[in-house]
Length: 275
Image 1: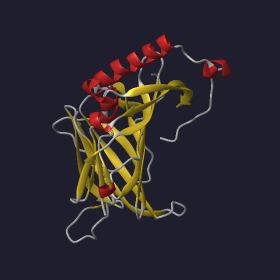
Image 2: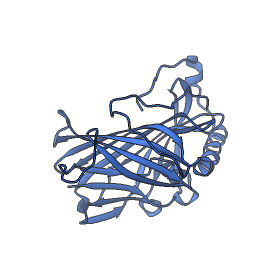
Image 3: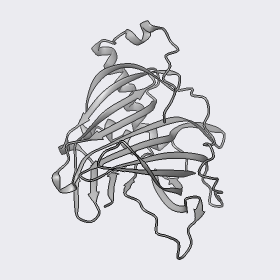
């Protein structure tokens, strides 16, 4: 069974607290919370438009655990060329378990397939059309920086999150999650979403996702881009998890070529957080 998660329309990090305890204990009043959310809305509204055209590698490590998630088994490692051009994502699978795809090779498995890590979730959560509700959660350090943390919820009527179970069933569902942002710039460093009120026809109990961003050098500028993501789906018969790594970012030009590294090499291009 393959479960596909997509969005319509447009990483374990250091959690040490370098600032004073008072900074993490202070609760902003309602006016200050609204100012924080407005900065995040402005950032989200400009995020995709401000990204350059680029190429990177997406490494997807797949795991399954059966009915109980107490013993995970590693599956195929899929390495794709990801092209981001004019706000659109395009993926082409190039390597399976570190080997180039060739005629006659064993068919790889993709029990859980997702898309939309490059800004689509951010855009949809903060879009006026989603009518998301936000609740203050607190302060938390992400990548060594203090972030403002809000829980959010989007109901099914305003959702664009769709699930497809092979070709058997499809549904648009409600979702909720948490967003972590720089309190001055509104830049989003981490975002999560959870769907756990799914129709029975999808044979799925819950799906959750977490996306971590970091400063990545493309050309001569640094951009906040996904560096890792984790997706966990629980069906009636299986637990499935994908660990995604995005690496080797480079500017996309018409004559660009991409050289794939080993799936075990560390990500390239990440820099020190500044937002």
